[in-house]
Amino acid sequence: MAGNRYQTVLLFGAPGSGKGTQGKIIGRIPGFFHLSCGDVFRSLDINSTEGKVIYEYSSTGRLVPDDVTIRVWKRHLDALTVLSHYKPYEDILILDGIPRNQHQAELVKEHIDVLQIVHLVCRDEDAMVHRIRRRAIRENRADDASEDVIRRRFHVYEEETRPVLECYPKELISEVDAIGPPSDVLLKVLNNIVPMQNTHFQTKLKQSAEGA
Image (spheres, rainbow, N blue to C red):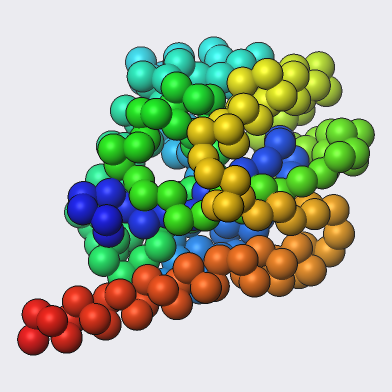
């Protein structure tokens, strides 16, 4: 970590660009830990106070309020750390689904040190809508079932989420074409983030040697 901040790579892109798919695969590689904000939301009891708020917003394609988003995300991450599922000293955190607007980008600064942003780019909105609807059927995800809701999510992404990229230096942002076989996209993503892991590993070795 840098100070008390988690060393992090952000997977960034529009709905349906494959952030979750790529993140899950990368998270199985030792030295990386994947956390999806969407998965965190879906793990909540829908009858809880926070669960009701999140469902109310996500089911209509709107962004969940920032205070709820950050609180739920950080609490979940802290629990994973306490349980040693995520080991900040060893793992690079792979985040997708957060931050979703510029205010959230400011709020998470105290928690994460962004090493790189992998921007999964897909310029064919219809292809992404088709991908999301297939996922909704396969994973029984009600929030992805309505095309109207999906289209609204794209509008929200363009208006609120895409500007998040402006919060970070351009040299931290790498674009990867999200259309194509998942294995091909994965290879391109890994080409961008493995050097981050190598640097993290070398830093850890140096710190261990200095502490010996």
